[in-house]
Structures are given as structure tokens and as C-alpha cells.
Image (cartoon, rainbow, N blue to C red):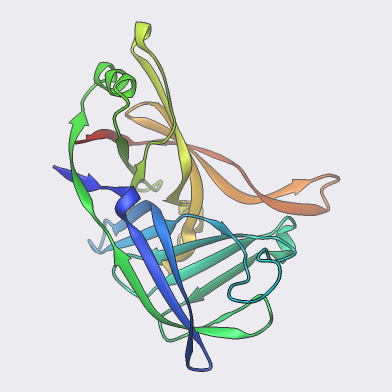
Amino acid sequence: MEILCFPACFVTDTTARDGVEANNCRAQVQARCTLTSERTGQSLDYLMCQPCIGEHMYRPGQITQVPTSEVLIICSATQDDYMLLKKHADHKDDVIQMSRVGEHLRLHDGGTACRTAMKRTLKSAPARRLDNARQIVDAVFEDALLAGRTTIWNSDRSWRAILEYPIGYINCLPRISGFTVDVGPILAPDFDELNASSPIACLRPTFLLYKALDHVELVYRVPTPIGNGSTQTLHSSKVVHSPAQCEIFQLQ
């Protein structure tokens, strides 16, 4: 079988200002999430890209925007839906922008830019599924490239999500054939926030942990009080336990 080869997957976004090409941003795909309605059978594919720091381009002086922000792009794999997340130290300064090709985005300098094109390059590689803990541990010590696929459902099983991701971090102990996957951020839905009219809005950068193939812990990034509680920051603090079907693959 084949699975996404994430190092070879990219989203390239093109923007223009006043009708003149302003930037082409190529970001590596870090995770994929496929949301499926069990009632209608409709499936929607989404990608999450490598994060960056808010930046100034093609001008003299400092590159880093101040105040600093972590910028993350989530987009449809097949349609024009696009969500830009800008995380600041203080949650009140965070920005979420939804747009489609042909629509405008607000910029750090107060102006706008039009998204004129979005290209996705998705490449797959041959892979074999590792069927038990012994095979997983052996693959780790062979320094094999690993990728995961995890299926989860909402509480009434009316929605299903298939999460796909590279496994860049894994713990293992050969003498007991034990392993613990701890990856992220990947892309996962917060089913508590799911709105069928805009499914992309429920997607979150999420950490995923599991030590067996039938149960996972999802750690979502949510507004979290800090200090005396008067200020919030986005932090990975919402832990959800979920039954799951996990598969681990060794790329050939």
C-alpha cells in the first residue's frame, strides 16, 4: 500500500497586492485530516502546514514582526477553503482568518492581500503496516521512517476523522515490547466545536499520544488562564481520551 510521504508534500500559496504579485509561500504539509459524515457519506480532506513566525518580506530591516506571532495554515486538500491562525502571547491578540482563493486577507501592516492561487503537491510512498508492538519496536531500532493513521469518532459516531501524520517522536522498550507514540502538533477535529456548515473551523493543532492501537489521548490547544486568571494564552491543555483505531506504517 501507499501512504503520504510528508517531507515531499507542500502547499504553495500565492498572494497579490493592488493586482501585483506580492509573495509565494511554500509550506511543508505536517498532517492530514479527513472528516466524514456517517449520515451523508460526504468526506472532506484538510491539510495542516509547518508553522512559522510572522514575518516581513522583501523590505529593508528586521524580518520578524513585533509583537511576535506563530502562524499556522490549515486548508482544504481539494477545495479553496483556507484558515490562517496567528497565535500571540495574549489570546486576545490572536487572529483567525477564513478565506478562499480570490478573497482578501488582512495583513500585519493594516493592509490587505488577495489570495490568487493555492497549489497542493501531495506525494505518496510505498509502505507496509506494522501489525504488532514487536514490529513497531524493531522498526524504531532500524531507524525506519514511520507514519501513522488514526481513526476517531465523535460521541454519537455521526462523524469520523482519519488523522495522518509522520511519527517523528516515539518511545520504546524492547524487553517488554512497549512503545508510546507522542506526536504533534498534528491536525484533529475538536468534536465539541464541530459545525457541519463549516467543518474546517473545528480543526485544531493537536498532540496525539498512544501506547496501544485502540485508545488515544488528544491534547488540544485551547485558551488557557495564566497568572491570576485575568489573561489567557493558547496552550495545549485540553486532554481528551478517545477509543481509536491506530495504524503505524514503515515507509519503504
